[in-house]
Each structure stands twice: as C-alpha cells, then as structure tokens.
Length: 184
Ligand SMILES: [Zn+2]
Image 1 (tube, helix red, strand yellow):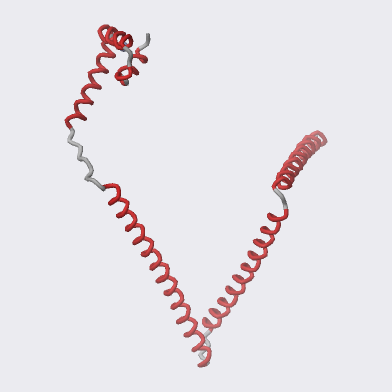
Image 2: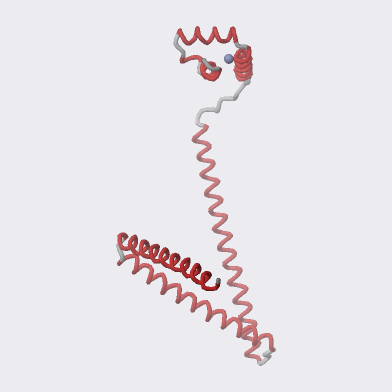
C-alpha cells in the first residue's frame, strides 16, 4: 500500500478499524518517512494542547452583533450627514455665484467674463435637459419594448442577429478571397 493511504490514516486515526490500525502500526515500524510525519503531527498536537486559548465570555456573539449593528448605524448616519452637507454646500455656492453674477448684470457691470460665464451656464443647463429628455425617452422605450416582447421572441431575435452576422462574415470572407484572386 502507498504512503498516501497511511498518511490519510495518520490524519484520521480515530476512524480506523482494528485491522487498519494494525496495518498502520506495521507500516510505521518499517517506514521512516511516515514515522517522521507522525512525530511532526504529535508535536503540533502537543503545541495546541499547551496553548492557552481564551474562551469567549458568555453572550460574546450577541454583544459583537450589537456592536457591529451600532457601528453600521453610525456609519450610515455619518454618510448621510456628509451627503446632505455636500449637497447644501454645492447649492450654497451655486446660489451665491448666481446672485453675484445677476447682481453684476443688474448693476450694469457686465464684464466679458460674466457674459461668458452666464452663457456657458445656460448652455450647460440646455445640454443637461436635452440629455435628460433623451434618457427619459430611451428608458420609456426600453420599458415598453421589454414589456411587449416576450422572452421567446427576444431569443429568436438574438438568434436571427447571430445568423445574419455569420452570413455577413461568410460573405465578407468570400469577397476578400475573390478580390485577392482577381488582383492576382
Ligand atoms: Zn510510509
């Protein structure tokens, strides 16, 4: 029998039958390699036996969960406060900036950069609203299409697209070889 079997038996010496136990002992007598492994395992077991692993006090798991829960809640609150603070800050900056710009315009101090800034702001808002409109349109279309077309039809559509791609690739390959032959 191979070393491997005896090594397995060494690792699981408690589930052995009497016959297996005897076979293992006989092998250990004859095999220095497995004897060495047994000695090493005994050393490790002895080491674990001497280690004074602290037992958790009763209720440890529950206390730990409570602490984790409190930590997560605090973290969520902190993130929420940070987001609100950041939003308020951005809003404040925008309001102050716009107020300054419009006051300057009202007073008649229309420096070139103010005009440029106002123009850029208007354009930015226009672009953003157009983008938002497109996005809304596409999401509505997507939802409607997803609602109307059953999964089976989706599958056949994809299969058709795949077949068309294969056809097109085949045609392309033929065209390339033909044109090469013509040019030769
Ligand atoms: Zn052996």
